[in-house]
Length: 397
Ligand code: TRH
Image (tube, rainbow, N blue to C red; front, side, top):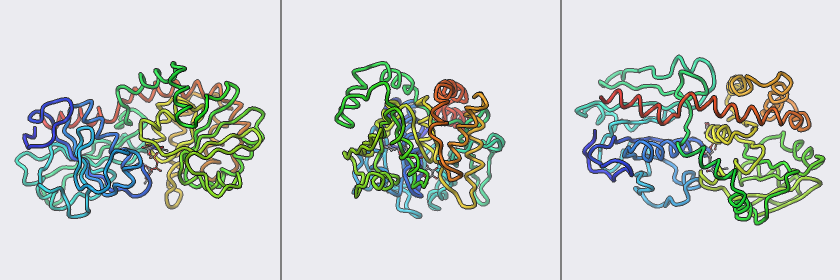
């Protein structure tokens, strides 16, 4: 274990704790740093590791971690050292190589750092943490070693996934208890509504929908269907890429945090982008969650509510088989008609056809039950941070 002088992790003493460096290059959006920060916090708080995060975009990071200072090259947040990483050469002020090195999403490590890894008396455990995919091939490639072409180092591919034999997805130990505490406390929910939109919770007849998505041509038709819905729909929209379309629908110049608009049976609130724990509460407060990318997609599964996924679009529609692979897991035990309605709705939300809210809504009881059952099934794959920590420890022995 590292005996280097680092700021201590919150659980174990610095001299015994495993030191871990996570390198994160933000491609766009929030998922890259969202996943890395969640992993960092879990490795520190649940496994007692001393974690350092190298990240090249503090602005994206600050959105989901408001206490981050934008002007500091190095800072410590909740026991985790955050380095503003100036790619590609920068590797921290001191070349202090960790026991475990995580290269997130195939970002390239600084060559000077890799050379220092090779010089280290004991080679670090080196992971390439991949993007999440529910496809079957993932289990075959998970934990495959890849020897470095020049240095005596081996990189291990760590594949998140939704099925057995994969690395699983991130899930904090306290998460289910926190969700249950929120869901069973009328006072907590009332306080959340008051704080978030300045109102009491909507009536039980209303359907509460959270909407986190990329720009999406299907949203216009869906807003119309919600406007014309027989029962009230309360829409909660964190400020972002879909906000422009919502503003246009209501004839507003923008739909910025704090704004509220109504048409027919649709009542919409624009929310400020919150911290990651704040986003979980939004998912728990809603009946149906529209999520995107990777990390919010996972959080919606732990929220155990029906959800609709806007997958990150890739060139040549490479994302479509991934969408279907996720559906194959998630919808596996649904009755055929509910499964078809869900698949049609997800496909429409991702560019194929028009979303049919009435058809989706008709199957809500089955979708709710499946969402709850799926959260239990998915937990059986094990939490990603725990799976990674366990593998690293076997290598460090
Ligand atoms: O922001 P994203 O679209 O990120 C994507 C994906 O990660 C994708 O795989 C990757 O290739 C691409 O970026 C470059 O969606 P994602 O993954 O859901 O990340 C959003 C993060 O923001 C997640 O950690 C939840 C968090 N969040 C908050 O903390 N507060 C909020 O108010 C909201 C709306 C989100």
